[in-house]
Amino acid sequence: MAEWDDIDARGVDGSRVAAADAGILWGVGAVSRRLGIATATLRTWDRRYGLGPSERTEGGHRRYSELDVARVAQMSQLIAEGVPSAQAARVAQLAQAGAEPAGETSTSLARQTARAGDVAVGARGVPMTVNAMLRATQELNAPTLAKIVSQVFDRRGVLDGWSTVVAPYLMTVGQQWEIGQLGIAAEHMASECISTELRQRMRSRSGRRPANPPVVLASAAEEQHALPLVVLAAALSERRIGTRMLGARTPTAALTAAVDRLCPRVVFLWSSLAATGTVPSLATVDSLDPELVVLLGGPGWHPTGDPAESVAVVERVASLEGAVGRIADLVA
Image (cartoon, rainbow, N blue to C red; front, side):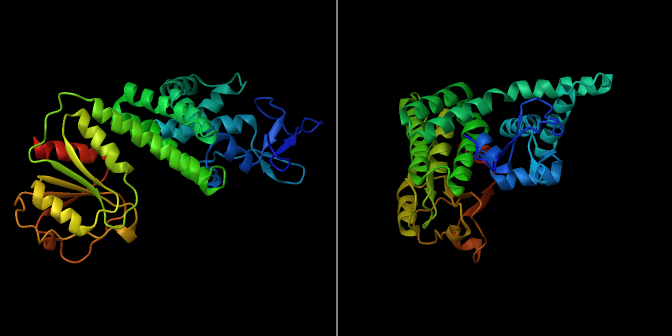
């Protein structure tokens, strides 16, 4: 239910015309809750792309009409499908122009709007899925969330399912947690459902060729998050590349012991925060493969000292897809 300061009844004199004739206007907070988009993001889209509230109350407060909300929703859909923000904004604006009852719309604009519609059709299923996942999360309905996650990975595979649906969903969960719309229990449930589903997929996959030497996956010594490792392991599993996952907060001593024992060709390390992004040294490893490559994933890594101290080639990978591709090349 919208709060009093978030919606306004339409003026009886018709001065506040909603293009969709919805009868109510929406404040930025209400739009944020309705679409699951952070208020800061809404204000950025308004300032940068002109996708903001077009109506005003009698007191001068800006409000979103139903058509404004539809534009923002479409932009969000397109971004979730991987369309760049600027292009998504243009598409949303063209779609609005096509929806208005203005008979003078040019043939050129009509063609552009038709093309915009083609893009939106492909994106339509993504926000519906994300919204269903969010509803299950809000209700702490783990079985429903797990079922949806399973269907996403079944239909899209791990790489596409993660980047197109699951990652945008988790970003929205984080945004809703920040504004108090979701509790920590919901956030933990979301991560657990996704992690459990990915692990089940790895266990059920048969005929996987072992990567010889193996691929070691670990988080940095003080890094508490391990879900990116599970996603990477599941994506590699689809390519029949086996992994040894050490998990979150892997101490340097434990990492060097594992490298000494397993003699891996590749070590992937994850860090999400600068406070955890110190590259560990592998100089104490006795049986280190001279061709060992250490891949650094995540935004937390920063240069500390001489990379040569690790006695290994150290590379950064910018994305999940990049990590999968590079590992596949190294173990081929």
